[in-house]
Length: 280
Image (cartoon, rainbow, N blue to C red; front, side):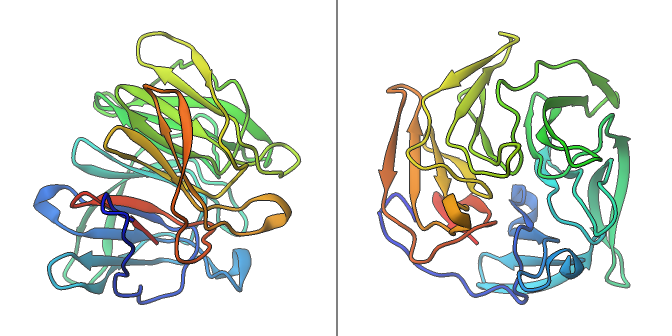
């Protein structure tokens, strides 16, 4: 989906994968990187190590190293570095914060552990501002829902206190928008999707409620597109995957329905590349 209200497809991924991490790489590393996730038909047993890189100029996917088996981790770019945190394997909720390096000659990716989460979480989402990393909500090592926000100074490696969310949630959607951190949807303690949203304006030291989305959804994905928070897909009531898309306008404080995607997607991910919204 782009600003032209048109939909078109990219070449399919090499592997069928759900709930991976995905990011549009910095300019000097042009491409879209997909990390981990799980095989939709195998549950926790099907978690992926694979990483794939999409070349924007050739419209081709290439394998590029590997990561630990996991899903439910958060992923973002902090000052040009790709960072992942948390997540779950078949037996463990992870507590690591890792930075992605280069692929070595043998084809293996280099990941450097740079910090340990005070509270291991899965189903978290990651955002960044001014070199700080924010690990937002999720489920802890005992799979209990949390509203905590764990804040890390990536330069010093120190964790610092940050106000918790108003509403505990896991597998929510988030993005940075006009200097504010926005979080929407996710699962509640009963594993039901929610529509509530909230924002944190840097320096105010508190979260503020926002209007709820039109549709309750978890496993959705969000991006900042031209000053709007665009939320795509996810899982709605009765575990039904969604085709719907809606956008939040912070100036008007309203959610507006957008054209539906061509197919329903839960556990999808989104990047904005060359001005277009790319959902996978």
